[in-house]
Each structure stands twice: as structure tokens, then as C-alpha cells.
Length: 252
Image (cartoon, rainbow, N blue to C red):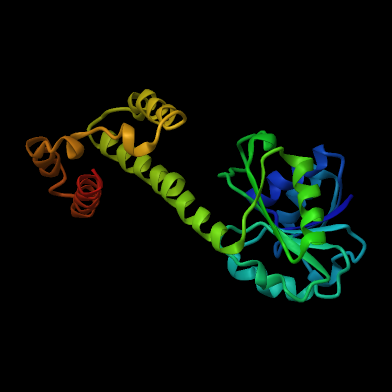
């Protein structure tokens, strides 16, 4: 299978490496910035390009892994392409690709960092396509990379993406806030890592709501007031603390 990778960021990098590992031939890596394209192209033995006019018409798969707001403009350039065109966005509907000969979505439900190796066989891949035949093609690509392949339509995918923001992006932001609070008191974030690991382990075997702990679920107002006193000079953090505590109380 010959592949053109449109994008050179975190998602594009992991996809390109996984496709290369599955014996696909990466023909080209496109980025608006030649130097960015070149970094990934060197890793997968491909040609780096920064001009969409240079995109090869001979690939079997065109993988669009770029910022959501750029997908429509890039896909319009591919309308005469005969290969399978897929985007990897969680929040962008498949309809943005309508007009292609063959198109679909290949959304990886995972967080990616360029510097961190990842076993793609553990990544859930959510697929959608223009019709049944196209879906078979998208699934065939997905199954080269992971056994975890799920039929998910555009509405469901948007909901998945929203949920992922809560459990990944927002949670990581909470880590950053916790690290900042500790640092201000001369304490190391390492102290919290066993707690983080145990919290994540619990939800592998139980509903998150059933393993909720902390002063809010206990109705421990005295402790919460003490916490808020510590945040008196950080009103933005006090507001987050209040909002989340109230949410926990209402939920439980």
C-alpha cells in the first residue's frame, strides 16, 4: 500500500510510523513547513513536500492528519484523487470529505506525543466511510494497525472526542495545577504519582462514579474551606475547586 501523509505533527508521526511498520510505503509527507515535513519523511523514508501541487496522484491512501480547521481546504485539493482519502479528526464530521471518489474517517482514540513511543496495537481506531464498500477499505487499513476497530459515526465520534477532552486533556491540566501548587510549597510532583496510578487503575475495573473519593463526596465542608483558604490568592483555582466540588456533590 502506497501512502501520502498530509501532516507532520504528533498524530501524523505515529500513524506514519505504524503504517511503515505494517509494510506500507510512505511516498510523501506534506507540511506547510518543509523542515517539519523533512523530519518525519526522514523517519519513514519518504519525500518531504510543502506544496499541495506536488502531492502524488498515485497513492492508495491519503491520510489527512492536520488541524481540524484546515481539513476542508486541504481535502478540496484532493477531489480528483482516486485513492482512499481519510481524515483522523475526532471533532470533524465525515461530510467534509464528500465529493471524493473514496473517503472515510480513521480516528485514533489516544493521546499522542512525538517524543513518546506508542504501541499502536493498543489504540482504539474509530472508523466511518461513505458507503459499505468504502467502509471495508477503511477497516482494512485500520486492521493493519490495531485489532481494536469500531464502527463510529460522526455524531458518536464527536461525543467520544468530548469525553476524551474531559478524561485526558482536562485531567492532565489538573495534574499541571497540582504540580504548580506543590512547587509553590517546595514539594515534588513525584509525591502524587502513586496516587495518579492508583486512581487510573481503579477505573479499569469499576465505574468511575463508584470509586469517587475526597472531601466533596463526604460532605466535609471544614476540609474544603481549609483548601479554599489556601487558594485565596489564586481566585481562578479557587473557582475551579468550587465548580468541581459542587459537581461531585450534585452527582453523588
